Image (cartoon, rainbow, N blue to C red):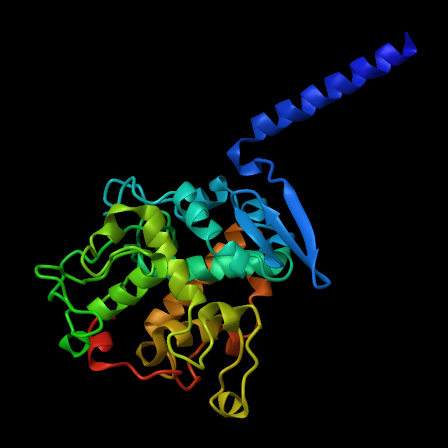
Length: 323
């Protein structure tokens, strides 16, 4: 009789646990961890979100610490009637896109705090680049990230004939700014398309038609160096990049400021108190607060800013006209 009671208690407990997971919703979906050791190194895989096997998948995944309600808080005005991409961007698209890069360390490098800060940093770039907020906007100017999915009034086709043999412009195609970290120019669409295995050179419009693809292109840019022998924005943020003597002389140090340097170079950095740089920093700090990290963990001014950093890259004539 006693053993039967124990079985019943265990059964009830299991049902209650299952019910709790269901009530918690999709954000708390169980991701079984598969672990194996290869040459003494622990490698993991966590279901759909971090397929692995990868050393990074042994850490917290993004949905462990960044859930749909937080995405809604960060981009609370993106579906306002006056926004220009109503119904396009959502948490599911972001987390699906991020799943491709979590085995490579996006949001999964180091501990939970580092992951949270990297997601906030990446989205700080995204929010700043896609905002339609202004000083007296409802909810404040930082609440309007992901207001756009494309350049609204492009002034040109952004076709650079210098790349006519490697990334030739498709007839009638326009390579104006699209996406979460907007892509401009045929060569950028071509390079991103090769990496994502999507024909963006002939169909640049795919970026503005599919939010998951738009986020994938942005995360690819974050994770990929602009040039050989240079770090990516991811590298400089998670401290896997070690500055050389020349970097130190150029006042380039790991942190959020260096991510702006990698992705924007001369357009934003080394200019002192640049308005666009300050706006991007403000988005990052705002998102840190909303995610529960707090801006006090963002680091000192020289880490946050690229005002005094020598740019990694000078702006090309074509790139400078797209900023």
